[in-house]
Image (cartoon, rainbow, N blue to C red):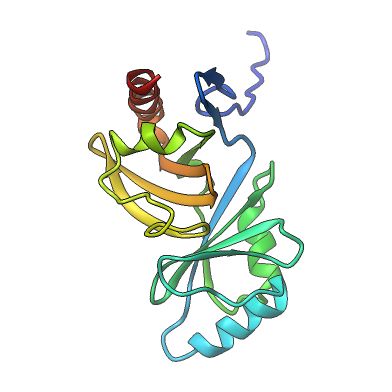
Length: 189
């Protein structure tokens, strides 16, 4: 029997495509670690996170970049945040836990999510067809984050800059998620 070698690969094989006024690509090598602030020790957790990333946890529905711009801290609820960063390896949780000195409960969420980045002057028009949120920059500003549904799929969306959005959905439905976004882009192109 031959030796079997398993090799990890992105959920969408590193998908990248250009459309008329829209760029869409898989966010390859993205690590996602949830941080739950312990009841009664929220202030200590916030201080540890600030010390580790030189950034305060933002308000719920907002995100901030660490001082070195390598980690995005997204606040999803009163006591839940995500650390989102580029990392290719199985130790994302231990990296975050070590930096914050275990001041919050951490869970590696990397394999649960697939990330897509949509950008370009027509990106918002494409998203407006499938995203029920008002993505007008005056309403959903740069660094805002929200949970929503896109074409029946639970999605986390972050406005990275004026015309760029990071969208994350369940990796188990990565193909359906990509299909929904591609179809919407084609319908506005």
